[in-house]
Image (cartoon, rainbow, N blue to C red; front, side):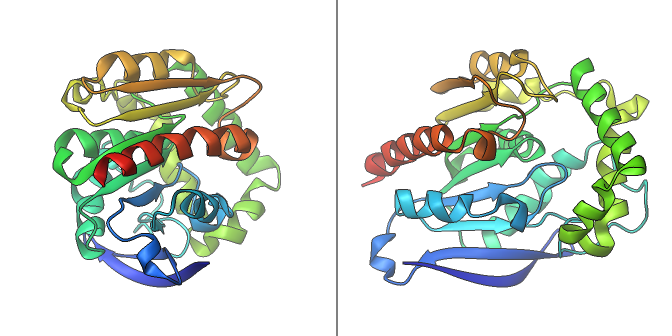
Length: 270
């Protein structure tokens, strides 16, 4: 049976809300890798819904889900507009290493959605010894026009529809700074040249690279760049009739793909 424990940890000088997923009989997960879930640019713990718990139960692995700085119940950004254009680098190089250290995780399988996927790629390039494998969903390695178009649409919705109120249910007082910290940064002129392709050849751990064919924020060029750019084994999974959130929009397919990938890695660890 799955047991959830909510707690707060400190990384890169900020208090972060976190959830630990384990089993009531811990022998079930002993010696296995830990699944670490990294949310998207507007995400947080509850927006994963029950997906982390289902995947942990399906694989027998414990899991960690947490709100990055400025999201959900974690510390707020100091002001609107304070997000740096290298914020994903900062998360990968400074915050995530401390998160894993404080949780005593040294054999992680990173599962990153969108921004979280980009963060997972940078981290695994620099800290390869701490990672057993990486799963990305809708990750970006460079900026595309379709990405900016999708973000402009989201920004318009934030101002003219109930999107702000919907997000506030999950992010509370962080909502405005969180949203602008994402949208304004991506739409800024200095972010147009953001690119992490240079990190890909340094990634040698196994990868599962997932994207929806109908992703509103990216084309298959993203998944192609990742699969061909890394030096380790990489499986390409482009899902038809699916948008930017495969783990909800194509849940069964994603569960099956991730489960098979994780169980293969876990069997190699034994």
